[in-house]
Length: 551
Image (cartoon, rainbow, N blue to C red; front, side):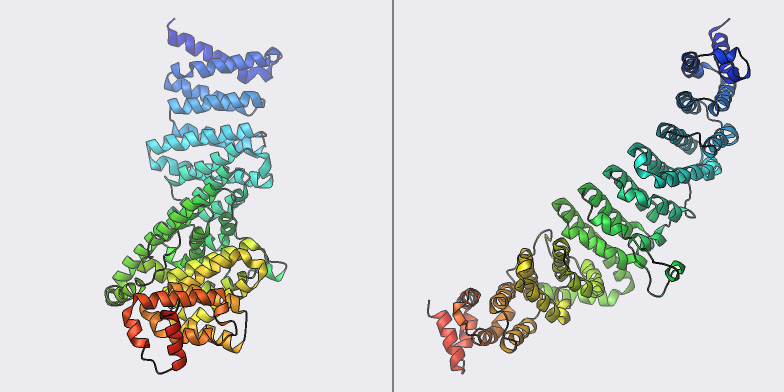
């Protein structure tokens, strides 16, 4: 008798004993140790069988699977995984393995987490091997596999803390693996909806994998319609049926990810938003919903995320430029080649340097995108500036500052509202942590907005309303020091009228700083001296002489 014949007898004998042990008194005497030994023999020797005998052995194991206890079921699943690796038979998968798993699930035989992991591992191997064979074969079994995946997702939803992170990660990776081969268009929204609870999982690694699955389904499998739910948005003209019978509950999943405690989760989330802009065909329909989260990356506590967010917005802006260039060639070229160059030259005379992560002036495309979006969120930002939560106030002020950098001179119509909001912040002793950021906002307004606009605001509020001079002169000084001197030189007389309209005059520290700044500027520019030394207004001429001549 040759080696193969002995192997066949050994395995066949072992399987027959295991499969028939409940049918007679003799076989019922088999101990657990004996059963495990028989299974180990099968696991060890199955690769030595020919293809026909391997299939028969796997069928016997499937029959045994539904009868035995968990310890033996785990071993049988391990043998099945090894078996399908050594021989691929689509007919056996469709007619025996998948129906057996369905039976296993329907009768609630998968009582432990270890068993569920083994089932998912078996499905993973089936998908992996079928991918190597042909996509047609996988399409024949994808419905069964997806049905099992969705079943386990629903099971985890009921008691999410009961299941280990490895099981959750296994399911999420299996979804991506299947989606790389077959079309999930019809059920992509259903799958995303089923995994949303994992975004709040206590393990960050689970949350990261969940975000990757959502990104994959949004971009590759047309799951874009669920973005409204993810961002907690509902069209005002659409009223859901449940609204009439009870409360409508909306949850902003994206908002929770922005504030997640783990920076790797936030980094993965911001990358997902970036990829949606760059790769998702329907991104233009959801630009309004996604831009706010993209901007949130600039306010993040992590410097790496801030830098990445700025780079991402620049790349999105470049893409937008190319799209505009194709659609509106004439207006694009005029703005870029003529007006843009004039504005750039004008801003170069300002000494103000943009704060990090703005390493340079944002590109034309990103500025247009943010300018369009800022009009929609402007009033919401102003409301949040006085929120009772300090973190919320600070983030809103950071968002305002970053939007001012992108909008540049287009913010002009809203400058009085912004300055009034900043004045309220700097006047409130409870908001001391926001003063420096408020001064940065004033710097940006001074740099990009024509001086007449903000000087007129300070004239009105100081002369007419007799308000808090200390704060107002602080704001005025912040605007003045960042304003391009080619423009500011025409408004020294207006600044003088503001200073001498108050009783504080030069006793105020910020007034002294303003006078010193103007003095330095005039001394550096002889043209300004020639202009003002012949002024007819004696009061202004005296003010000028005090600045230039006297220490």
